[in-house]
Length: 392
Ligand SMILES: Cc1cc2nc3c(=O)[nH]c(=O)nc-3n(C[C@H](O)[C@H](O)[C@H](O)COP(=O)(O)OP(=O)(O)OC[C@H]3O[C@@H](n4cnc5c(N)ncnc54)[C@H](O)[C@@H]3O)c2cc1C
Image (cartoon, rainbow, N blue to C red; front, side):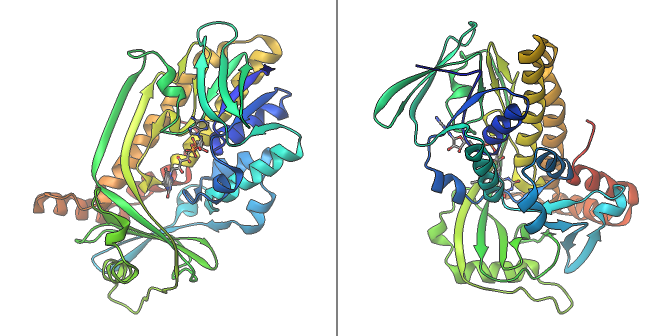
């Protein structure tokens, strides 16, 4: 039997950052992770950090490598009909910017900070179940290194992602679910080649959406809209490069650099929210509570925003017995969650080809793209949401 103040399930960005922010306030926690350390540190996912995420990681003392190695971007390109249009994010938002730094790098930095501080972080736990969620002392049972364990805590933080167990542990009928599936997916690759543009390129094309992004000066991250039931085996490297060249082609001399593909995967596109984010003593944060399609680059940033609110609320509760923050946690987070849901849906709807869509849809999308690229008000809407709104 172990005792702690906060039992955290999941060592993704949400769980690890929550543990770190709690420690800074003197609150103890134990983090339980199903996978091994190497797997978690190598998992390639998001890579765009909002200004507020960068500021929080810096203030929390885990931003050194991020500042050394992250790529600060002050703009992005929207490309359609063979032409690129730059959206000047910084000029439109009073100097704010995004930083390109892989999620797995954030995770590595947070794991190092946790272990350096002597914090409890158990990898390869198995069979996690939650109990007594409505009582004063909820427990988490699990197996670790061959023995059955029980963690008794004051609060459980469900940071175990979309397929985790914490959301499922909440009695049926308690949570309302809001969701939307999209009739397409993203095929993502990581290629060992210098990026072909200094900034991200979001490309609308008749054959489907494409995104040119990067992880470092030597690693390019590229995505193609594909069918949701496509298998990576149907996408040999040559087909991927052909399709990328076609969709990203411009009327001028722009060329796409190509190199060995070192990672390939298909990600479904989904919008999903449960409400509320709390049941008794269990609080859901990050992908455990909500999923956005990746077009807005928000999943990781939203997880960070949740745990910022949760860590402050827990700090006040443990230090002064003040429960106002915890009582407001769900409502506070859901305001940002829905703003981000709308932005992610809007970017997705503007940039993807909808199978079965008629020419009317295509005309509307082009009109919207031209508007965003020609009206300062419309461009500002995109820019301020993309770099992250301070207040929602
Ligand atoms: C395949 C994929 C690709 C993505 N690509 C992008 C992208 O390109 N751009 C973008 O903006 N966002 C992307 N996202 C979204 C972004 O990565 C997530 O929003 C972000 O990881 C959320 O962090 P989290 O900590 O809430 O959840 P996660 O990162 O999912 O972390 C949850 C953790 O809990 C662990 N866990 C799960 N179940 C259990 C259990 N029963 N017991 C113990 N531990 C458990 C998991 O192993 C994991 O480590 C992607 C997501 C996925 C799944």
